[in-house]
Amino acid sequence: MLVTTPESRYMLADLTGVVNQLPNQYGYLNSLNLFTAAPTTQHSFILEVEKSDIRLLDAQDSRLSRKADALGSNAARQIAFPLIPYKVVEALTPEEIQGVRQVGTANTPETEQRVRARKLAKIRTSFDITNEFLKAGAIKGRIFDADGTLRLDLFAQFGVTKKTVVIPVADTSATSAIDAAIEELKAYMEDNAGAGTIINGEDITVLVDSAFFAALTSHPYMRDAYLQQQTVLSYQQITGSLRTGRADGVQARMSEFHYRGVTFVEYRGQFMDNRGKVHKLVESYNTAGDTAITTGVGHAFPNVTSLAGSDLFQIAYAPPFKMGYANTLGQPLYVFEYEKPRDEGIDFEAHSILMPFCTRPQLLVDILAEPRPA
Image 1 (cartoon, rainbow, N blue to C red):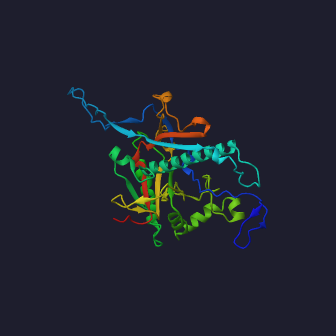
Image 2 (cartoon, one colour):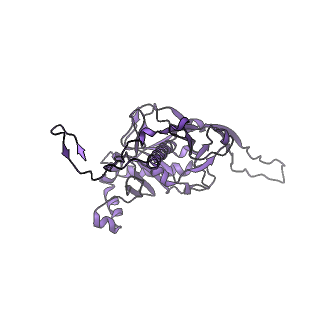
Image 3 (cartoon, rainbow, N blue to C red):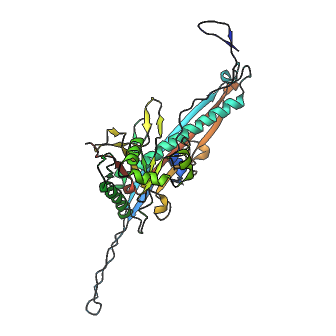
């Protein structure tokens, strides 16, 4: 192959292959299968929340009085959820094939099948990472669009206040205060589940950033517990690796630490939007809710096995704006293919209309390594 350089316009070089450079495609929340699909026929839906008033009974002497306690009535209210529409149109034109060689080859012409597969894979990946981004918002209780628009505030909709627990791992002198903070988190989850039954407070996952995980596992009070937990596996003994978690599509093994019934998971997921801004999936905000805190933070939530049923995390899907799909149950993703007039190419049109949400946002707890600034 002939290569032009500043030094010489006629030098030969072998073409040995191609290197594909792709951004990280984090997918830890997608891999957990936390969210149950809730397809709907409309682009918004109403969730009815019924609160039961159940109290202790007072003793009554039936021989002296016919008076009896009346059970409290149930209070119900409706919450509206608008779904978020996403649409992508990608064109395949003759200019992408005519006279174009395949990357990584010397003179093999590009084919329609290869370009088609590449474009469809790119569309699918874009929707997958957007899905992960929205689910991270649902875990935090506030779903934002990539442009910063707040689409759904679960705390405002359900009328609850977000709980914040400070686990003082940033304080190297802290000892029992760390244990007390973790017990506070577990007790809060158990006391506020609103499930009508006992839940397992030792089935809690906390997604934390790298700064929090490093402070937690290097803390003098926690270090021995962390190291002893790792050495039970021969793989870590041989390799020295301290990663014990699952894969997320980017990291072969996530860093996890189980302590006092709580699982701390280091999650470094982040995505870039169309404006070049990087969105971290693990971040918190100050008390005013406007300034991001991007270090020393985490987000705690109970696993679905902790509660009766699997309705804790749901994701609603709506049908696209197409005549043939009006009033049908929505699916996660639709891709349509249209031929351009006069045989000038093909348009791929993808739609996804969705909204992930949590039915008990009082259980979505912010975790901080130190007190939140005002």
